[in-house]
Image (cartoon, rainbow, N blue to C red; front, side):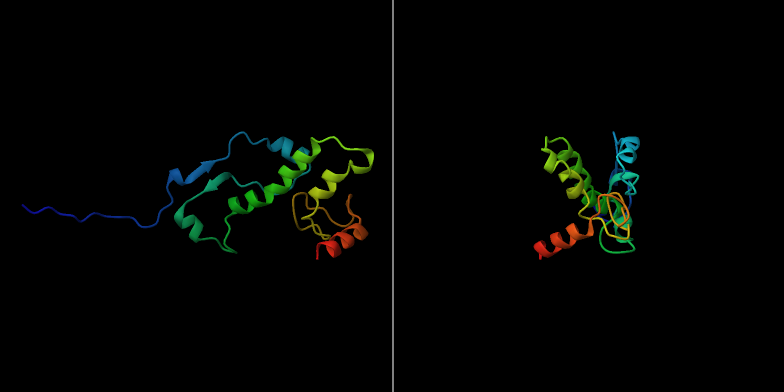
Length: 130
């Protein structure tokens, strides 16, 4: 008796189970809070071909958003804490530490002309960080 062990195996694929949908996302609240990051359509996409076709860097759009989302979560968490009058701007300052002075970064794409930028504060923070 001869048994054939040959099977067709697809090595790379993008299958429906590779896509994890984004659920319960409040886009209206997100925009109302001033966040401007582009939100990917899916929470995750584990598609093999999809991830091999990343054009720039090694992170997919979904992975980059997940990393950048930490600032949004920090802002929301810090806004829930009670502060004295002297410290009430902590969430604002902590939430802008990834912004650039030319308005090209996240989470709100602020520029030097937008509050809460105070260049002298940022220079001090950069100096202390080094």
